[in-house]
Image (cartoon, rainbow, N blue to C red; front, side, top):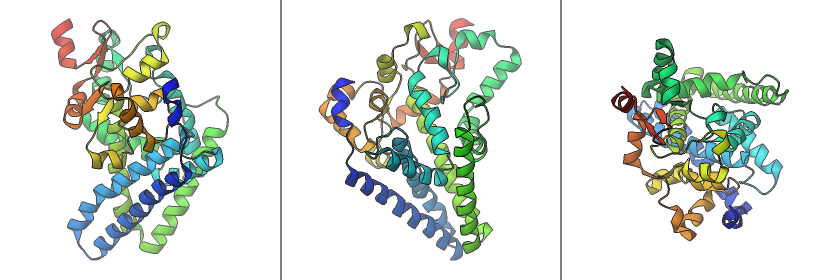
Length: 326
């Protein structure tokens, strides 16, 4: 932690530049999709969904850095940038910010699961469940649900109401409702300008593709074979951050669209480092490069990993559980 503190300082000019080279291309891609529809160039429309979704993911990563107070040097700059972007990403910034802080404070802690993470059962917990309980967990872990239905539910529906936050005051509701109002106003203006159908045909595919990508990234960052989980009495922040978060070593283009979030172990070690400075950390500290490293190809194998085996200290699949424990 101490040796990474020197990377925490953001550069305001660089931050503004990063915001501009993301927001402007996103606007252009959105407009190009709309134009392609009007000209009935459906192949171009379909092709543009992917870069537009990638740029929306990148905007979310800027919002993410704002939530950690790392994108700009002052709090108001971070918060208002995050709130505006939250309308585009359909994510209530202030509510998400608090929840995500909880994730960083408890990631890898077996006794504090359920705070902004992917639900993960131990082998013992799964085997102790009823047949219906096992089926529900298997359905939840099914890739079609995890990366298809799940992202749509989380970003389009769950984020519209801050349910499950009883006793946490009015902030989650204010954050959620003001974001909903911003979404309604922005969507209403765009629908009036371009029509309901064209707006939905352009924006919904972008949001759904970006949401699926975001869930995939979050999944791979913590759901890999040699990740780290420990009971509360043995849990230690540094160990959980370094070994419970992967280094998702993506190709350069994907690294740009995902704003270096693949360097997740470094991010968890020191969340105040702006994403554009994370490569500096790996350059200056090469010993961090191979810790939890996953390539794009290797990451696809993480989908089968579903249960934490406390005996072996690793994630295993349902099939492995049956082979080992019968």
